[in-house]
Image (cartoon, rainbow, N blue to C red):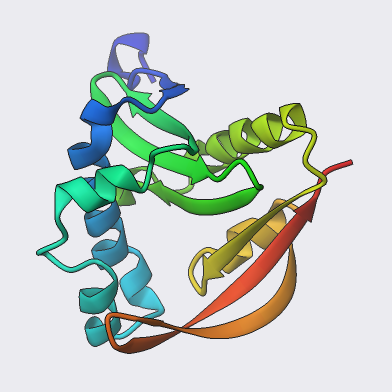
Length: 163
């Protein structure tokens, strides 16, 4: 491919409060276009409803370590972790799946966890995300049923042990 035709490289940066709306839109779009393979339309509507308010969404980033993946001026993914080592969210644009974005975001999160001298990182992975996390050396602690806006979901409590 001609260099002029190549998309700009993906860069990681820290989250800024002005990113909140773009991250909410990316989250909604990804759940509706990617996670719909493993969850019902009712579950998807409960997980990523159209009426999610930006303010509570933005508040969920406060006090967390959050990285944003950007290609040119477009945000293509994000990941956030509590300082306790709980990886809350890792989402990549439906248009950028299988391009190494999630792997890069996860590496940044794991590096931050090591800097905090944590011994492990945990997450609750969707059915869709479970294979990715397994490929990154996470192990399943347990299969779970969780409730979100009145709908039951299967997900997996997973753990990565930092060496």
